[in-house]
Amino acid sequence: MQKEEFLQHMSAMVDLDEGTLTGLEKLEDLEGWSSISMVAFIAFADEHFSKRVSPRDIAGAETIDDLAGLVGL
Amino acid sequence: MNHSLFEMSGKTVLVTGASSGIGRETAILLSIMGATVVLTGRDTGRLEETLSRMAGDGHKVEPFDLGDVDAIPAWIKRIASQTGPLHGLVHSAGIQHTIPLRVLSAAKLEEQMRTNFTSAVMLLKGFRQKGCVAPRSSVVLLSSVLGLAGQPAVSVYSASKAALIGFARSAAVELAGEGIRVNCVAPGYVETEMAGEIRTKMTPEQFEAISRLHPLGLGTPGDIAHSIAFLLSEAGRWITGTTLVVDGGYTAH
Image 1 (tube, rainbow over the protein chains, first blue to last red):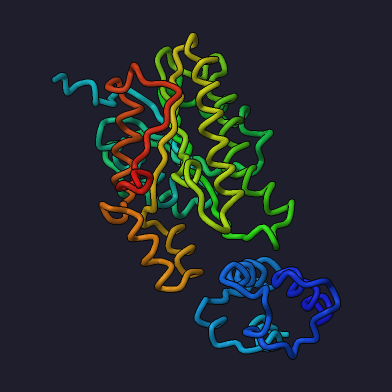
Image 2 (cartoon, each protein chain N blue to C red; image 1 turned 120 degrees about the vertical axis):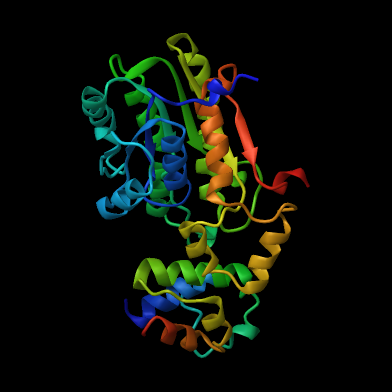
């Protein structure tokens, strides 16, 4: 998966329109980032990257790009 | 009290999901109660491991992928031709995906429904075939408290487990005349490998919150196996179409 597609998925996870995320956004600044988004990200990483991401990994991420790093992008 | 009502000697029971957790524990318990058990699951090695822990002999390991739902009735017919008519069926195979609606795909939805629900319907369709089923028999489908009460991110799992409860009611009425009882057991959070896998996706605080929802604490596979065995046995002969909730008080709140 390319970065652009990743950002599209992330937009859905934080309830934003497609094409609005650049990757530099801080998670704490995103209104749609919630505990449900975290669960969604874990399921997404598993389904699309076969990566096991723990809640602790996510807690250590500050930006959308940090999340991309967790799945190897 | 007539203890022989709990006797399972001379009875053959097919157990799905017998490679781990509740299915494995049920197979072991039924063997101790005297039943002959047909173990199924996808992983032969793990089924053999269950077999190694069982009492008595004559049990059979029959690996099968229940995802191949259309093939289930013919598969049951083949098993029954080797074992003789079946007295019981326990459907313990299941998957739980934790997926919020915002990232749910139809493919993931259908995978869960197929494994948890469609397979149950096809198993019962196969089980009731002439020559496959003994004159007095009992079917137990593994539902869940999540089929009765909600939690976030498990809506499709909940739906698949609630579907089993509705299915068991109508199937019980349809099959009563054929001497087949159909019931569900709805466990709360039981410490199995599947539950351990789900736990890795939670924070310690989230897990603690789930624990607190069970006044009697978390369950063990044995807690569920005992209820399944009861429903399979003659002690449960007047019970059909119902759901036995075994949840340490989860739904008592």
